[in-house]
Image 1 (spheres, rainbow, N blue to C red):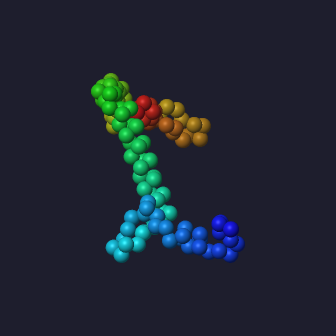
Image 2: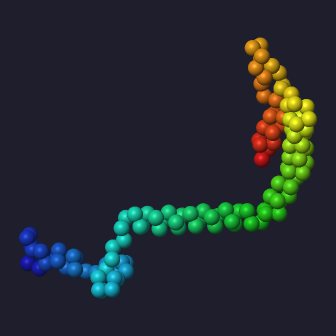
Image 3: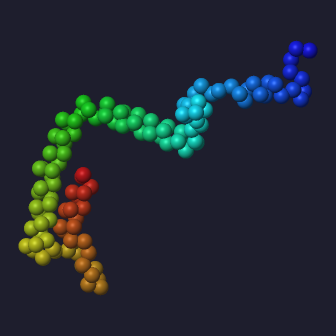
Length: 121
């Protein structure tokens, strides 16, 4: 009979002795095996690089528009809201929007102005 027989370990020895060409060699001519954690880290790094490249290609033509938007928001919304909150806080003793029945002051006007500014950004 031509094929391997039950109990014949010659095929097993051939498979075990075949070098894995995908693995790098160490100084002694033996193949190094990458640990599972190294493989996971390298694949995660590749995925992050791919994601960053997608972000770059998405935002690169829009850089000027994004910068213009942030300038607009800061100049026409941010400075007036922050300036008004500053004046109300320091010049007018931070007036509250209302006072509860038990005398507790609730969120001031300057707090609401700064809150709106944070929501825009």
